[in-house]
Length: 208
Image (cartoon, rainbow, N blue to C red; front, side, top):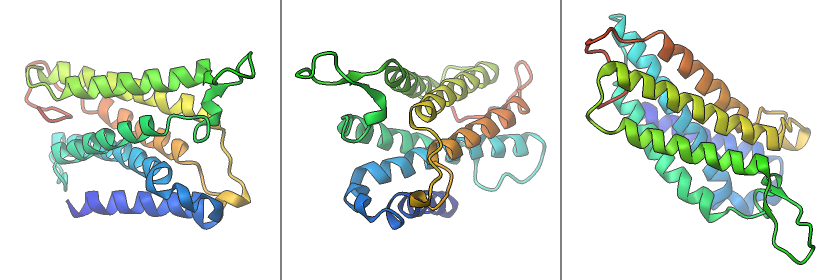
């Protein structure tokens, strides 16, 4: 639990440094917009660390925090992240996800890329829900975990496509949080691929 709390706290600190410390005009966005970025990244990293812990346990090494605990911490962050994102789904916050309307009097609509961001985000949430069901065999749970990692990576990469790298002086030249999240997902998927359970085995990369 201390490691999880530290990871979430460090993510919030990173978000505040990148988006507020060097751009004080964003201070008013801390309650939701900035914290939402931090929570999303922390949730992704928790799931990736859960896959690493599962791999270490499978190979007979000390896993530290239990893999299931890491995964539940990731689910907690996802549940926190989704309603915050929906609450601020507006061009004022996510202008990169909206296309200019043909009629100036009409309200902006999500662009194709913006729709893909939220479609893959919703699909990732749905696969997490499936992973929490108890009926899966270890091999089926492993495959679902791979599917969740794939759609989550698509969600993050489409977000990056919309927003770009943006490593400027006003962002302290720090990498954007979507990029750090993508790296975390890719590493988690790599660790997951290396922890494939045998048919009928007891090893499972995520909790039942």
